[in-house]
Length: 156
Image (cartoon, rainbow, N blue to C red; front, side, top):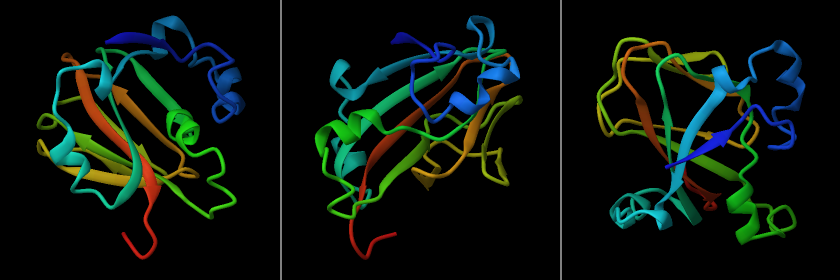
């Protein structure tokens, strides 16, 4: 995994309104990320189970004491695959898959819904305009998998 420095203002325009909150610092918001194509993991069985096209898969690790504050995802990798996605009336969507059972201090918030007490394999999904956050206020690493793609017509 490689460090993703979310405190850099040039990351994307979706989190820019929140820089002045003080959260985006190397001490608070650095996370670790890797893409499926950078690993030996076989993610094909997972990607075949979600109703999306042009999928991308990433893994994120938040160390204890780190958070990824309110933001909307930019879907950068996905939009590189299909630059004319708006003209095609496609909707970016992300599936958040929990790889381990919930641990004390780990939580995700999607708009007004706080998610805790998940089981390994549980999945939530949200679209590109959903504000969300992830926090590790616990004592162990918080690792998740994200499968992103464009929503297929008449699915979900």
